[in-house]
Length: 223
Ligand SMILES: [Zn+2]
Image 1 (cartoon, rainbow, N blue to C red):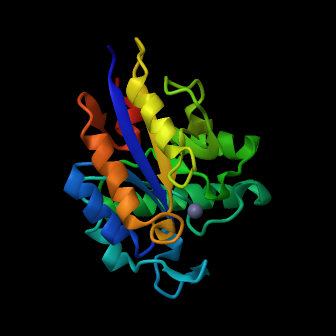
Image 2: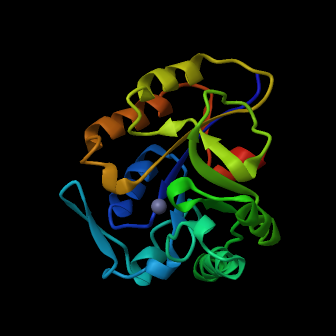
């Protein structure tokens, strides 16, 4: 049977990423963190269902994601399809350059802010050397997708069917590599799902024999 890979993707680069990285490291789970380097400042903050969501300063972000993948979420999280082409390029390529400079790793992945894009955005991503970009659409299919620049996830971790989706993945067989792709925001933990429940998801997945845990890049681009 071909490989079965589990990958996680978390967006925005906020303070709750720190305990999340700790949790993932405890279980040997790999994640991709999609970061807005133009918002790397504690002054960039908002409130989500009564909880403070605070972006990290660059210094706090630098050492945090060791062993995981960092990927583009644009400089300042705009609706890309509302910008002119120069601005789209600046938002994507500027974030890529910052991340490559800060983390000394090649950056080839992205998650669309708000999940939205148009044909101009796709063209610019190709120009920037982006190899995959995640939307916020779901697919029930775990096998390789045709268009990685319009990548669909398995689900957000807050999906009420998360358990059933995981069970279906564990049981499914294929001759092709299969990927379970779960995404979200760390600030939803403790709000939309308890940290304890999420840890139980990690525990369950890592107790299944034969699953591998990879960053988005490795899950999607490696055989
Ligand atoms: Zn976002």
